[in-house]
Image 1 (cartoon, chains in turn blue, green):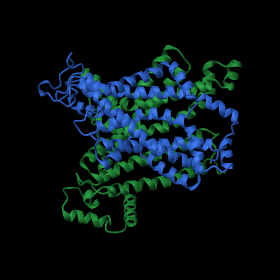
Image 2: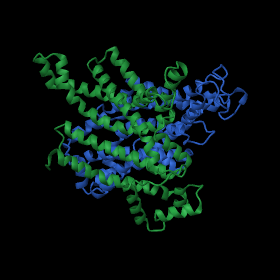
Image 3: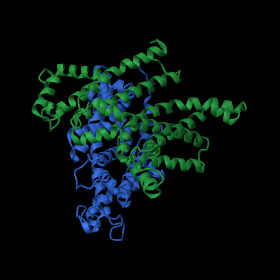
Image 4: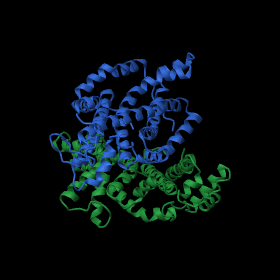
Amino acid sequence: MATSTPALSTADLAREREFHHPLAVLRRLGRNKIAVAGLVILLGMVASSLLAPAILPYNPNAADLDNALHPPTLAHPFGTDQLGRDLLTRVVYGGRISLLIGVIAVALAAAVGVPLGLMSGYYSGFFDLVVQRVMDVMLAFPGFLLALTLISLLGVGLTNVILSVGISSIPVYVRLIRGVTLSTRELTYVESARSIGMRDWRIMLRHVLPNTAAPIIVQSSLQIGLAILTAAGLGFLGLGVRPPTPEWGTMLGDAVNYLLSSWFIALFPGLAIFFAIMAFNLLGDGLRDAFDPRMRVL
Amino acid sequence: MTGGFVGFAVRRLLAAIPTLFGVTLIVFFMVRMLPGDPARLLAGLLATQDEVNRIRVQLGLTKPVPVQYALFLAGLARGDLGKSTVTQAPVMYEIGVRLPATALLAATATVLSVLFGVASGLIVSTRQYTSTDYVVTVLALAGISIPVFWLGLMLMMVFAVGLHVLPAGGDASPLSLILPSIALAAFSLAIIERQTRSSMLETLRQDYVRTARAKGLAEGWVVYRHVLRNSLIPVVTIIGLQSATLLGGAILTERTFSWPGIGTLLVNSIQARDYPVIQGVVLLFALTFLVINLLVDILYGYIDPRIKYS
């Protein structure tokens, strides 16, 4: 399977580096209206999550059984849920939980997956073989099933949701970074670094890791969206964060029982998940186009 | 590295064996990693002490771990996955009665997503930058961002609760299949559409397509004869990858529509801590996915003669 990559000249690499200059990337991203739309949705979500207590008059967990399942009104623009809690408030506070889960789970996956992928691609041989077989086994639990299996072992709760979603995202990073490393380590500047006796870990940090930055950024944007989706799926099955914590998937899981009478309780939390995932997808696609339209992510 | 296609297929098969063992190891260690007595976990909380002891002996839980694993594999080979702690029925039976429902749902969703995904991708690729192209692109974007369970709820609300034209759940009538399969198919359909479109556009730019046009072939013939086959190779890969999404999504879809399949069984078992059933269903999902991957790999080697059999 050994594929040789034609060595790039130093001039090529200089151009590559210029191509990836952060300011140039940001400029290209800014010209992409669709990606900017994603970014705007995202910033709106982050801002409303942070400012939730200041902009909303209700407590997300304050029950008011006299007003349970009330359709949208001026006082409750999204209506109220089965315990009379304000749905708009819960959807906004739910954004905190979902963003938190998405970002931390993906950071965790990258923190484990990137070093493993780097070493796996750089050293090849036995280490690579072992890591790849372990990843094969993890990937054999298709998609959502890996996170579901993990949560069934760990038990519900915020920390365990983050762990389950994070661990199930590790293989993506290992595969991605290994691929980039395999092609980078054949480049002439890596060869010359080795020939002057630079240590392996320094070559990996100084010469290989920077090449993985763009794919990591693009993949992470797409991956946070996926992590939010997975966490919402766990919540929907009643295996997410513990009640009464407002979480979008859990809210939808509760809504199933009230679908006949109260459409709004299923509509708004779902719309929130939809827009959050779409924002990360748009941003991810836009970032890829801004870095390099031919970049392969998983 | 010769051996041709058959050798390639055999090598792929052999390469899947370590993964298969890894999967059985994980499922084996699942209950043993949990705090508490594995015999008690596998017998259920309501089981008598005699029952717990019987399971302890049966699974050899007093013996060394490698022996336990060998016993576990021997059980698997006989199709013995233990008994449900809830119903006391064999796990194989619990899975067997629900498997057809899941297979039907997954197969219908696969057919829908491949058929409409490839068709819409083909149509828009020959109409780039037209309004059709934009509408389909926006729909595909929505399709990859919409959670399967929420799409299911919305479809249910419109067609079952609102219009009363389709059943909201269960599998009482053949019509019950429609909403769950649409919900499950949506994501993969969108992914397949995007891959088909970009792959077609890429091929349409090739020199040999220009040559075909230059020598006066009708556009329909050019697309059919020169573009289609070359474009569909990456699409096959994507379809294989989508089987993971479909299998995982089936669990959520079944739950949404109370579809009596193994996804519902798995979720109920997790909530009831019915570990023998959890082990069985997880194992089945992983095995199914491995087999599908293997088939796609082999098919891929078959349709693309440029693949080096190594």
